[in-house]
Length: 302
Image (tube, rainbow, N blue to C red; front, side, top):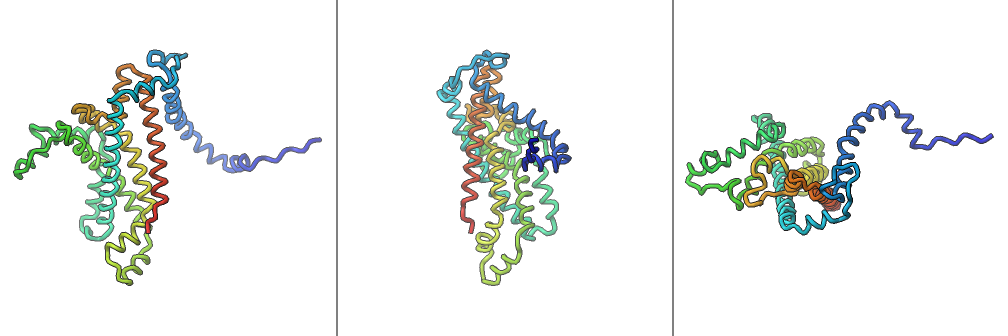
């Protein structure tokens, strides 16, 4: 008579916490169904011809779609502008959020601290489309508030979203207003966990406020900096809403980011090329996210 095989450790643990897994199961099913499965399907369809991509038996053309998009000068230009916009936005959002969080946490804004916290976070919960429509009105060359203020001060007019030289600046400012509050809250939360004894010891040793911030506070904020930088990188590489609301990829394709260009290709029924662009963006997000995380984790913050 053969002896029953002992239950594997992983199976024993799953059975032990079976109730918890049952609670997690509906959410996991939704993630797989509406998150992972569409990604897998889009990757598969990036190797299919546009005319048969959504048939039951699509015709697969190998790397033809990828060869087509990388031979497209407009796609290469969209790749460049996406990376440039992302780099500027990540640096500015993390820097502004860190500075604002330090200011709120320092005690200099004791009277209006709650107001300023609410003011910086309110845009985060404002609907994206509504917020960007307001910014589009503000940048209007005829009746916009931005040029009205500049004109009253005797300053040169701002080209805003109508000028290829200023459109990226205009979009960066709008998205900075929209997202910086989220990153500020993460920094503020992390600052509640800082060890005050370290700062006090540095103060007793005669360290200036700047040296205490650079050598004591900043190293302790590394987890928050890493999280914010990674979140911001993913956020801005996929930039879409601000473009479709404010610029439609213009002027002169200067804001034709990869996500919006893929949307245009899909709208033109070039499904294979659109999926290839989406897959390229997906790989780019994975690679740059891992690279940024690796760099930040290996950086000596002392």
